[in-house]
Image 1 (cartoon, one colour):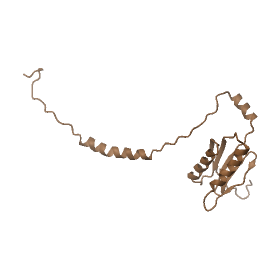
Image 2 (cartoon, rainbow, N blue to C red):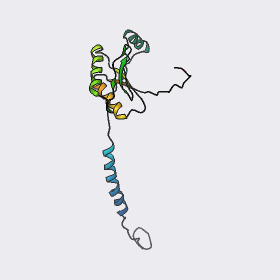
Image 3 (spheres, rainbow, N blue to C red):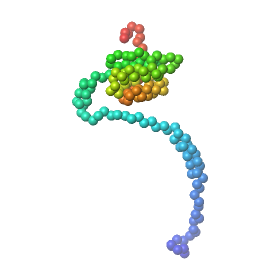
Image 4 (cartoon, rainbow, N blue to C red):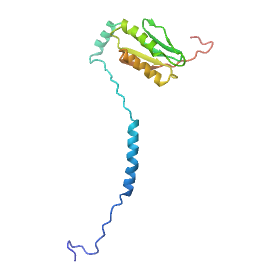
Length: 163
């Protein structure tokens, strides 16, 4: 009899086959390393409205005349306007918008309204994403940090329907 009270043959110890696991890691490590290159993280600082009741916020809104600054990006050009009217448009020349003209227009607004931080960027659905982001970056560089993005959907008016 064997010690421990068991009778019979001893079972042979077999080695664990590590080749499939090594193959898996050989493929998985480069795939994960390549995927990490494409994962770009962009952080935008957002500012929440101050804590307070709705009545206090409404009083502050009534006291301050809203500019309602809007930058409209269309296929023809970029228009900057607000509740007081519109500035001359930045027309598209040779397929591109001139960023210096937009900077000059936003600087005019900044000189008139130095405390203004809000702007609404509106664009047509056919405008490339890069153009919209470039306009938003220019607005942020000029000090308009609270940016809202709006999509314009133009509906054609059929003859006889009126405006």
